[in-house]
Figure 1 (cartoon, one colour):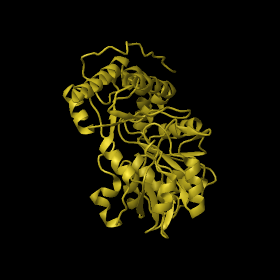
Figure 2 (spheres, rainbow, N blue to C red):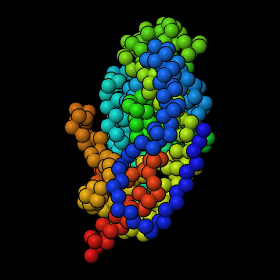
Figure 3 (tube, rainbow, N blue to C red):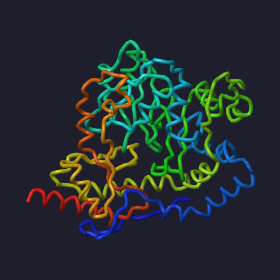
Figure 4 (cartoon, helix red, strand yellow):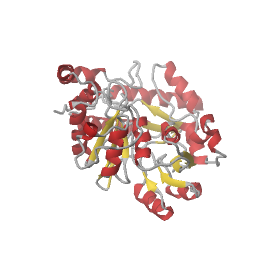
Length: 394
């Protein structure tokens, strides 16, 4: 079932109202009958993790993404760690990652036993710059892990070509990538595997943490399926016919809860409509922010893009965020410190100067964007931003 919604406010209208950075009250009110029924099935079945709802979700996600295998786990971060381990990461292996991303892109490498090697980004779309891989690669490099951010995917064709030249295995931090695609291939399936995060604010969000690994590789799928359940084989791998039943791996407890799977199954029924809604609201931002001198970048939506976050680059970014907060408008800074400058990665240095990532961290600001947002809220945000720069110039 999809629910058709329209964007219907006057773009010039400014409404005096608070605008939260993220909310999903209306969505859950609409979907609650489905969620209640599915959660009731969980209680009736008596299996609260790694059960029927998880198996159904994995199947639905295979159908939606086109992946041969989807393995549900308890978070996007664990999905990254298990994917890296399943792909054969050994202690000390270098993994090239973008310096501008959420910390989990690099911390997952460390948790899996590898060494993060930071590379600069393309200033246009904020994703890993293919040409930056050449500068980051060392004799220890074994993998490259681009992250798809905000609106679209990294240039996987070019990254694949550079990776092949250096003999690197390509994995994808596609945590934000549900619904994104390039050349007809869903995010996470351009290399040996990728991940999804179902953190509540994601395009497909649960009521808490949940994630998944996507892959067309049966060996990776089988290892992830075992690793998520203490390395156990046997019935753990029932959903993966043809995969060895004894893994011999030391795993962890990374299973997905069936209650989260129940929520996600309900929300999948309106995912395409939600993606369309996000795109419509993003276009409202495009119109409302046009011509403001302090806003120097807005996402350009292309085929296969999904506007998970509406990100702008702004002059006097921190002052603008404070101004909007005082007006009751929520924003988020993605990301305040580039990964190669974060103290937790100091011991993996010395790190190079990465000017594009460092500049993005001083300018990038995410504005409210989610299906429950109303067009008049977007107009309020745009009007406040326009007023901020008008007052600044005056």
